[in-house]
Image 1: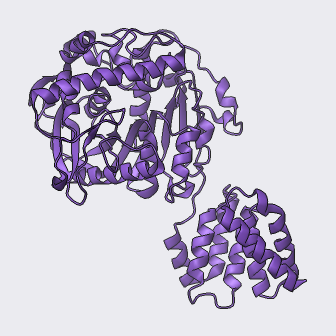
Image 2: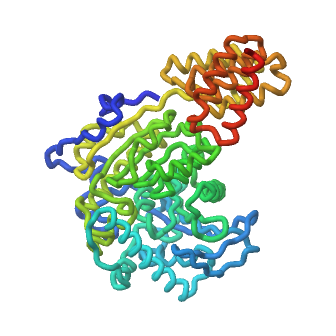
Image 3: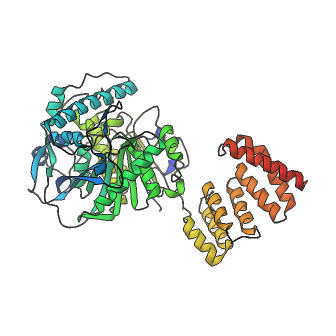
Length: 551
């Protein structure tokens, strides 16, 4: 995909993006996604503030369902305390919240309390007063906790979030109308996983639904409780939950399952990346103040066998603030995806949830920020919508177009990294070999290099393809030697690539080449980060043994 880039001059400089700032142009902020009169703004719920809503009325419903292939789990609070208010035999519990374009005037008006009370119905689908009180207390404790983390990062101060503050929020009307009649037709889908669903991200969901999306929110869980595990296994379990929800969504009559995107905050952005690496049905990802561009979450993702750059080709929008753990460079390796970066330096992680707008009702709810959190929320969501419209609906507006960006006063910088051509998947490469021989594998490699992909095949590809060739396709070792010629060309500093090129060169009788690459292997093996200690020991022993025979 060739992009029209506003900041094309920064593509070849890894660090120059930090210097970009767009001048503020005039005061002609008639919002770029369409005009809304002051009267129209005043007529809609106060919670939506001056967000530029779309042309659709919004319906809302909750689907309570079970995955009967897995046992149910107990509720766990953020400290790990368990409440066994579940029946395991019913299945794994799913509360799936859906916002959608609806017939105007249909459905029932509800308050924000409806979303908050659903927090008490994640593992027990009942609706008791006790569950409501539990949900309220949960919201207070979690809001207080998020605020404490935020002020720690910002170095600012905040007041305690109290039940009086919560009661003020509970009474606010929301934009979605309960069980409204869905409009006929099929709409693109946005999945928004979040641990506080639906109370944390409802404004985003209503906003996108008003612009013609079916938006689905749910809470990911862990293996043994409602709390998601912060680990590689936790990410994989969350992706399993994601896939279950995706299947349930596909049963709805108003969804276009060929146009599915993910929006995610915090660690859920890494859940989104993990999901995309396993399912190419997913067409775009928005990391909305997510942890995807952090060393910690990349470390979790890299432990997954699915998470390799060639498995991630969907475009990604990464919206981030100033945080000591966040750096866009941690996503630069996702080279096959078009990546758009937008920094709102004076925002913070959870102000991109409802909290950014709640500052209007409970000032500094998460602590005092240097920026205007309501403006930052609004402007970031304009970017999210523009990105989704471009990538999912196929609209032609350029995401980082200058006039559009100049109107975003809380935005600090943007840059774009274009994806490079990706290789065919391994099934296609097997097919090409069977039809056209190994010359075709080498031809594809050369074409990709000419187009700027200097490492066309991943390291893991060579292992998998080698094993496949070994089964009655390469009795003379010729193809495997040619395979590792390509591997060495891409990864000359890899001990493993040198070792296998040496071994297969020895097997085809190229003694000098085998000796040269065995010696190179031994010079690299101790410091090769890709090797386990046992792999390192085996390579050293075999290399020395073969060298002894060859010399």
